[in-house]
Length: 523
Image (cartoon, rainbow, N blue to C red; front, side, top):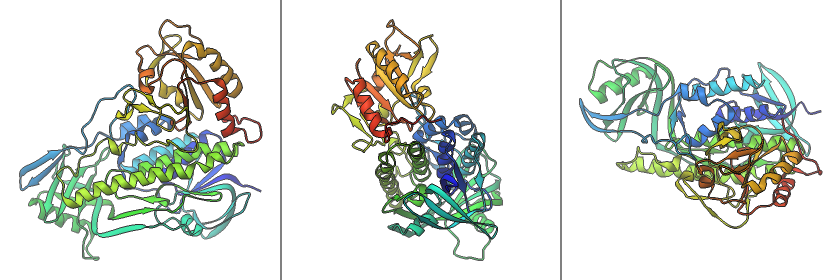
């Protein structure tokens, strides 16, 4: 007997995102976490633009926006003199293809809270104080042993996902090597604290020899994030240590640390698991890759692991062939490796003391990540020139699908991301000549696939057409009439042809979905 379809171990941002993706598709799952209380620290507070798009699809963009800001102006001081002022990144205006171009800062505890609230709306929940202590698997499923309050429970699942952090029990039980390095010389203390005597209009940095002390307002809260060298005295209370560091670095006696609500000592830890899958068990988030905090890549990469894996698990459980799940490891291993490279380069800048070490550019945003050449990416061999897609000017199979404004047949404004939202695939068929293509595909594969003809103003419209009034859709994708673009549920282009046919779409779709000659209809 199978108790659930998927057992998710670890209820941080990665596990919560995966659980939401499973819940919206009606997959039976359990989400367990060994902690007895929900995480309460700021830790990973930078949400990258691509993750903002994921959150929009999950239906949590509004509370995320309400909980954060664009980041604080930072000022470096020598005594009372400001010697430097800047931002981590300069805010930029949205474009037709990139609606959320900026890093958005939200404390991790609030991000997790918002994800839990969304999961509850979808009928799911987290089971705290529940630890996985053992697992075995066979050809049909995975058997996990859970412990809660001293009581052992055996649960049977079709699949298991370890999203249980850098010290992952799941990874260790699988015996998957986790090579990498830890640099003890880069240790820093991070703390969330209530601090008196300092304003919330900007963050403050004071140099201390080879190190620094900083105090920065934490978005959406009455707290400050304090960064300082770690204490060499294990018996020194954390509040006393932070107070001494701030007083000595700033030369001010009026800044008072009242309460420390969370703290951790960070060391530059860079690791990548040798594989993300062992049979019916998968690794996601920090269980598979651990990043330096420079560049804000760790949490964002983990969230996108869960977003990538959720729809593939659901489709496979509904009868799709193994090709979908087989694609998870190569796609996400490459993404994790790219994120590690970005984080490491930025860390080296900090260690060298480069003037631009605090600057963050488009490379950290996640918009140019692609799965070109991957097992699910198929084009007609003709890279198509396009508009402002993440600044690259080229869109091909495997790329993130750009957004664009359009209108419906009855003149209502709509965006492509509105069409993409939900568990379905989306086909954009360019040109009025594709009206019959759209009708046939919707009849054959709907609602798992939703096809839309993208027409020009003045051309015939119908129920399944969108009007590209300003040309932003064609410009963003760099296509002309006759093109077909099939977008995956996670917002990446699966199939793209400059002059596509209904037969090509059907062939691609059947290869991914019709293991037994049937097409799954997802909720």
